[in-house]
Image (cartoon, rainbow, N blue to C red):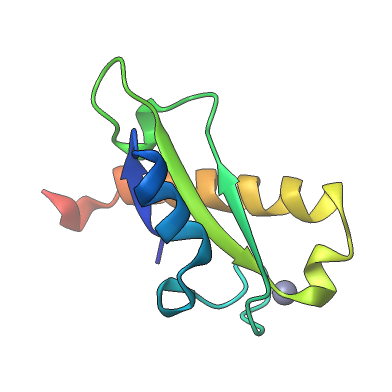
Length: 95
Ligand SMILES: [Zn+2]
């Protein structure tokens, strides 16, 4: 399951996404308790289904343990999001 997606959010929506605890999903990398919110703005918006000319922001959460891995955790999270997005696009059951 891909994390929540918003297209061109207003600052209010962005704040709500990042800080509303009710919106939290488990750690993207290990499924642990979510502590830190991250926003991923892909360099290639197309695989994530954004309309042309618009980008997607994908919000995800990391647990303390994964967050402590720093940039490596960010890289892993972004790679995972992009991989899942491509899988969804090529899902034969989608049509
Ligand atoms: Zn984790």
